[in-house]
Length: 360
Image (cartoon, rainbow, N blue to C red):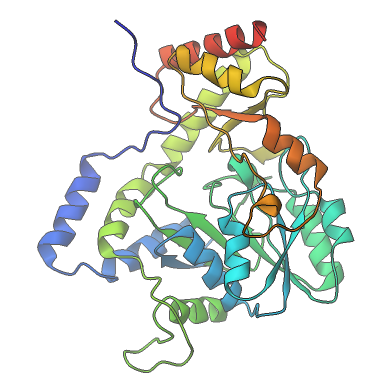
């Protein structure tokens, strides 16, 4: 009898999530309300008290954050191309222009030297992505923004509780966005959270998410319906209480994989950085598809994030060549590292990777 496949991601839904949702359903108050406010308060507590605004997705959060800090049509926003398309989509959806930046070959995060070369008089924002759970080099990015008077929007969709020297992802820039999609480090099913340095930016964001109004029928600006429901927030309130424990477990699981896996190009964790391992990503420089097939035959699911760089997608078709980004897209492979894994699963993952590597 074959063993069950070890999944790449495994959302954890416990009894408290069911209880919280049932209470909301029983109350009859399903739309944005007290539970959303409670989740914003709890998330603010893990981000040094920053003003937090809940929305219905991470993408909505990016759009809202950009609008709230004043990005408009014609502005340019520096974004890494090695990311999910939502990062650049958010820029394009408000009429601004995403300027694609290459990545560091070791961290997969934004290459500061390429970013410096692409700053123009139209550049308003730099949007670093804390990819796979590792913060971008925020000190270099902060230095660049001070030099050119730019704003920062952190795409922290994969970086809940990540940090540099104890400073949390989501507290470096003018705004930051976290995703609560089903496979993220905590979930509300769909949903997102924006943190702001400025309460005024948070106030504008609350209007953007709610048809441009703070008070009913008093629409001050043009806005969207980006509201989170109390049902989603009820799930999030149960999840956030477990986020620290789950994060520790991800880091522990990654440590086992580091110890057991005998391949080149394992994830880099710079000194002082807390990597929260949304993904555990290595490189397979030859025959990646065959490598994936071997893992699958061993009952280990893996994933490629991201097979096509955003600058090469038909929606953008920039004509650029970004060497490090394109190399990463051709070679990266992510392994299961989620909190549901047992010791036996981790051993099986490592053994399967080693066998596949040795037979390359």
